[in-house]
Length: 227
Image 1 (cartoon, helix red, strand yellow):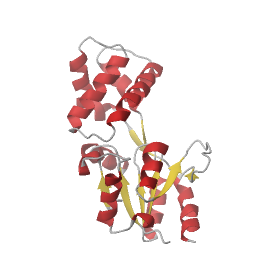
Image 2 (spheres, rainbow, N blue to C red; image 1 turned 45 degrees about the horizontal axis):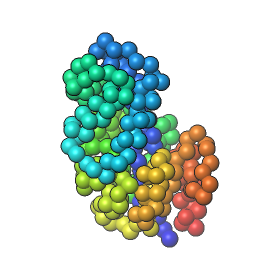
Image 3 (cartoon, rainbow, N blue to C red; image 1 turned 45 degrees about the vertical axis):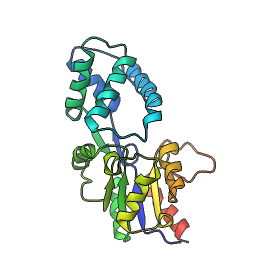
């Protein structure tokens, strides 16, 4: 088997962000102080509640308004609740910060020089990519970008992966997918027929799972797969 394409998740795979800090900054700008620990816990609770809706794609503003309102509820913020949810959505990219992991550009350039097609399959929306990719300098790297609103399905739904493969003109077994979430990225890609790779930047081993610690390690994985 020869690998022809490498696809990636975005957040916590290529780019790391500061969602808790951004939420805290926006609240502080509106006269509300909440500790990062409380915000982190509110996000964790929100993620569990949103799990059931992971494959349902609503318009981005509606989705983020609902998400923001849920986090505010878990933080016990009831005063000006609806106004704050709107304010967080409106000012998010003024307060959030996106950063590339140090090895990302070098690794992506090396993959391109190897003749591999590159793609993104992310649970975010197109408008998110339009903000984030130019901010971190990745807007020219990918042959295909699949967002939540591209096909109306989020990972781990197989349609998200299938659309990317169709655009690239490669079969599932000819593509590697790299992501940081075991359930959404690894199992989602595996169930769609791709070769899954899990990024574990803290080095925590996962039994029976092909893992890498940084993108630099993907080349050894490709060598192993290609024989």
